[in-house]
Length: 262
Ligand code: MN
Image (cartoon, rainbow, N blue to C red):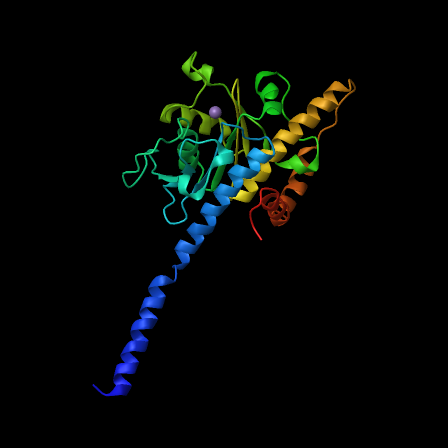
């Protein structure tokens, strides 16, 4: 074989090998999403929204019927290696034998009923619990929690299923929670916690954090003893778009706080 032809073959082979080594666009998106889910777990633990319990998930970018979520592990400890892919029945794919979260049905049933939702946080953050137990509704007290102005339904599992251990343990429980959530961004769970949903991981983290902060501030305002003025729906509508358009600012900061991101 002439030397020139041999060189051309070698070049073409090494180009193919390089292309194979280079991750496809979709695997780059998946890798970034996996990093975001890990960061979300650690950020929410850092800010006291998650402790040993609670979880974060994201819809799979290549298959909208699947979602990514950690194996059953405390959020602060979650790494990329802990992430599992669950199918629409909330079963692990590809024979993954690790223990998934008991309450994965929260995620599966909300993804099924809300095509606009791509990320979900489930939390037991203490400041929010009183509003799930009280006749006082959680309402937006400042612009950072304007998304609460879309309504904050309270899901009471006992109304549908009678006395239980309060956990969302199956598809029926998850479906009932998703029905309560409706088109809202947050639903409280009586005697348990709440869910925050969003079109992406950073915004879901934002909503989970500011739901807890609004609950704290609202309790303080009520404790002052006077009348409390909340955002009116028109103010909420005007304030909401700014959260999405500026989300990378807190996201960058939060990642730095947990030692992630450059
Ligand atoms: Mn729970």
